[in-house]
Image 1 (cartoon, helix red, strand yellow):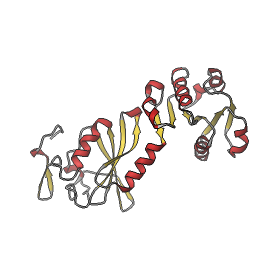
Image 2: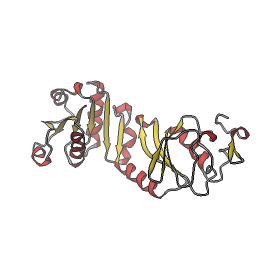
Image 3: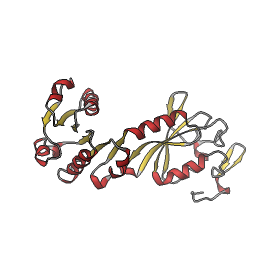
Image 4: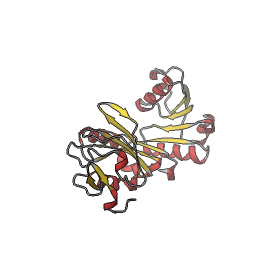
Length: 242
C-alpha cells in the first residue's frame, strides 16, 4: 500500500515507522529538511515542501497514493491537505489528525476527511472503557461520523445475563461483532449466552447508539420480558423490530 504522510513530527514519524514495519511504501512530506536526519526512518521516501501547495502534492504524485495521512500539528494544514487530496487527486482514503477538539466538527467529508483522529477523544474513550461498567462507551467514529465502534461491559446484575445473543432484539443498525470474555475474543453466534463481565463490541450508527444504551441500561424493559431464562421480545414495542 502506498501511503503519503504529511508532517514528520513525532506523530507522523511514529505512524511511518509502524507502516514501514508492515512493509508499506511510505512518502513523508515536511517543510523542514532537518527532520529527515533525526527521524531514524529507514526505507521511507522524503519530499521537502509545503503540502498546502498544489505543486508539492503534484511532485509527490498524490494520485498514486492509496492513503493520505495529514498528521501535522496545525489543523488548518490537515484540513487543506485532506481537501486537496480528495478533490484534486482523487485519493481513496484520507486520515486527518485533530489537534484542537474544538475543530473536530470540521473534520468530515466536506473537507475531504474520511477518518478523523482526535487524540483527546481517543484517550477519553480508553479511560471510560477501563472504568465504565454498564454504559455504552464510544471507542471510534467511522465513515466521517456516520457509524461508530462502541463497547459495553455487562454488569454482574444486568438483566441480559443468561440470555443468548439471539434472544435479544438488538436495535436496527447495531451489530454485535465481538465478545471479550476472560481476555479471549469470541465471535458471537445466536446461541452464545451473555455473562456478567462480558465486554460487548458493536458496530452501530451514531443515531442507533441511544437505542442500544436504552436496551442495555439497568432496569430497562426494552430487552423484553424474561420467561424461563429466555427473553420474550413480543411483549414490548418501543420502536425496535419485534
